[in-house]
Amino acid sequence: MRGGFVLIGLAISACASRGVVDTALNGDLFALKRKIAETGRSGDLDRATVEELAAAVAGREVRSAKGTEAVHRIRSVRSCATPLLPVLRDRAERSDDAAAEATLVLLELGKLSRGPLLERYAEASSGAWRAVAARSAVGRKAGPLRRRLIGDPDERARRAALQAAIESADPADLEEVLETARLDPDPMCQSLATRAAGAIGGERAVIALDDHWARADETTRITIVDAWSMPSALRTGGERKLLWAAESTRGLPALAAAAALLRTGGANATLGTAILARGIREGTATERRLAMAMAPLSDNDVRKSLVQATKSDDREIRVFALERMLDDPPSKNHAVGPLRELAKGRDQAAIMARTALATAGDSSVSRQLVAQLTAPNAEHRSLAAVGLLKLGDYAQAAAGLADDDPEVRTRVACTALAH
Image (cartoon, rainbow, N blue to C red; front, side, top):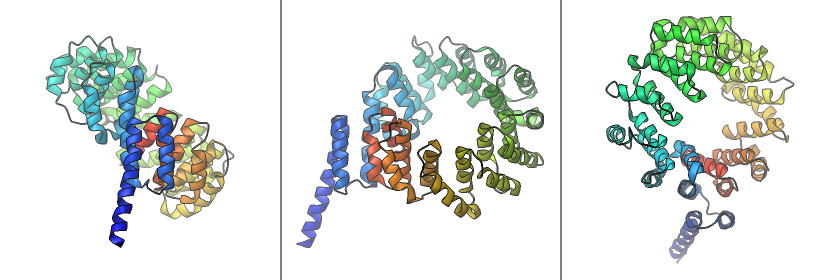
C-alpha cells in the first residue's frame, strides 16, 4: 500500500503544479496571486514547476500586450526567447509592429532565413517591417539596399540597417555610416553608425572618428573608444588613438580607453590597469564604479584601491567595492561581513548589498529579500525575486511572477527561464 500512497501523493503534487500553470495561462492576476500562495504553502513550487510557470507567464505577457506595449514586451523577452519560440512564432504571424518585432527576434535566433525576408519587406509601407528587411541585409550582395535603408525615414529601419552594417563590415558602407554618425537625429543610430565605422576599420575610419571626437559628448566619446577598439580599427591606428584617449583625456572616456587597452594586452595593458586603479581612488562616483567594474583583480594596486574604497563615506561606493571583492577568492571572506551589515539598511546601498550577496549565493539575506518582495518600488521587488531565484528559493521567488507590474513579471520570468 505504501507505493500506492506515494503514487497518490505524486499525482496530487502534479495536479497542484498543473493548476498554478493553468491559472497563469487562463486566470486573472488576482487568481494567480492566490494560486501561487496556495501552491507555495503546499510545497509544490519546485524549480521545474516555477520554470513552467515562468514560461506561461512570459508567454501570456507576449500574447496579451497591445500596441507599443506589445513591441516593448517582445523586446524584453529576447534574453529568454528560446523557451518562448512557439509564442513568438505565433505572434509573428500577425501584421502589426509587434509581429515585426517578433520576426526580428526569430531572425536573430537563426530561426528564419534572411533572403525571403529581405525580398518580401524591402519595400514595405511599414517602417517596422522595413526594419526586418534591413536587419536581413547582411553581406556585400545586399550592400546597395542596406545603404539605402541606412537613410530610411524611419529610425527603426535605420537602426536595423546599421546593425546589419556592423555585421557586414563592408568598406562600401563607410561613407554612409560616417555621415550617419555625425548627422542622424537619433542617438542610437549615431551610436550604431560609430560602431559600424569601427567594424569596417581602416585609416579613413579611425581619422574620421578622431575628427568627430572634438564635437562629441561624453557618451559618444565612449562609443568612439569602443569603435577604435574593434579589431579592424585597432590595427589601423585605433590602438594609437586609445593610448592617446587614456593618457590625455579624463572622465569616463579615458577609463573606457584604459579598459580597451587592457583587453588588447601587450605593453599598453599595464598602463590601462594603472589608469583604472587611479580611477577607483580619484574619480567621481560614476567613474569609480566603472573603474571598479573593469579593473583586473590580479593587480595589487587595484586590490589596494578597492580596499581603500570600502572605507568610503559613500555607502554605495562601499557596496560596489565589496561586491567586486567577492570575485576575488582571497578577498571574498573579508567582503561578506561588511556587505551583510550594509544589507540591513533601508537605503539604495542596502538593496545593492542584498543583490550582491544573493548573486554570490549567500542565503543570509533570504528573509530580507522576501520582505522586499512587497516594497513600493517595482525595481526593488524585481531585484528581490531575482535574488531569491539565484539563491534557489523558487517558492518565494514565484511571487514575482504575479507582481502587479508587467515589467517585474516579465523580468522574473525571463530570469527563471535563463537561470
